[in-house]
Amino acid sequence: GAGVSQTPSNKVTEKGKYVELRCDPISGHTALYWYRQSLGQGPEFLIYFQGTGAADDSGLPNDRFFAVRPEGSVSTLKIQRTERGDSAVYLCASSPPGDSNQPQHFGDGTRLSIL
Amino acid sequence: RKEVEQDPGPFNVPEGATVAFNCTYSNSASQSFFWYRQDCRKEPKLLMSVYSSGNEDGRFTAQLNRASQYISLLIRDSKLSDSATYLCVVTTASGTYKYIFGTGTRLKVLA
Image 1 (cartoon, each protein chain N blue to C red):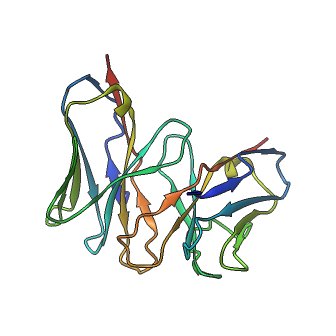
Image 2: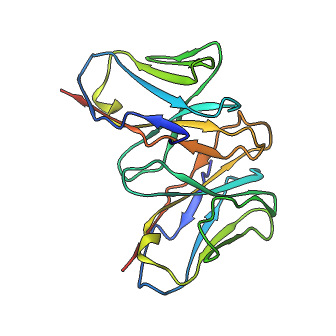
């Protein structure tokens, strides 16, 4: 079946621009997560959605970062006034309803490069 | 101190060798534990969940030691295709089930 889909695969933009990254989770998965992975590091948590609401946004680094999931399926991560330090791979994951033992399934990620 | 710590490696081992990775975590209330595998420039993929009683999947064995707050992964009879980065993952007790990752341990299996 279809896995988690992320678009675009790669995004190159100039410092100061606005970017949107899209995630389409596995059908039926109510939980959706965004992570960010820098070179040589493990992914770091950004935000978690349960349905349409952001249940935990404690990992967003500052107010330039925002994410939505208006219909409880597709999510968009939005970054305003991008900075070179925002360059990273942005990973989306989803998991089915249930307890913490439900593993998360990751998309291929969006590789964001800020020039 | 990081919440989840791993030796970044690289571990270079010959084909057929047995290799073990450890991972320590700082939050004693951590609930669930996983090992993920990540190939270069690819997404993390679940290798196995880690259960309190220990569990095995083919050549892979995972152990959890709650008292000492570490988990381990043992790979027997290493294959060239096992070359990857192995990420230790812990979930918090906060109910959001967000993953806390280690930095990953790089394994290279040599012919």
